[in-house]
Image (cartoon, rainbow, N blue to C red; front, side):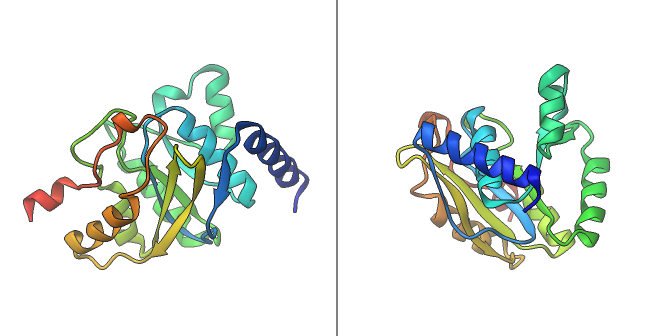
Length: 193
């Protein structure tokens, strides 16, 4: 373990213990991480603690507006990737190219796309998984049990309804930090099918 990884692990251990949160699950080696429910800015902090506790770096997509001043510097140093939500194509193309060559590529996406309650999830995680052939990992936060973790990792079948049913079943008992802001996992494409 590198000195930086060791320091991150120690910081994660201390902060998780102080906050009474725990981590769980098996760390994926490579994949697209679907993070849900996303209901609070604390989700990012807990996701970083999960990554540091697990000894991995997650390339977490964060809207570009957050990359100003000292917060931007911190985000970049923790692996966050600025995303222009008006024109995400260039960022996604670069990340897809990285996925082809990086042995430990983990891309984290908050599928809800916002901390507010939404009717539909963003389908970027689904499209990126299909384009790259990378499996998805269902990462989660559960406020009542104070658990942040890695859920199952699996390849998508291409049948949106079947895949989303599996995702809905996993997240059915997961509650975010602010439960009133969590939505049901559903893609707009399911309505169009």
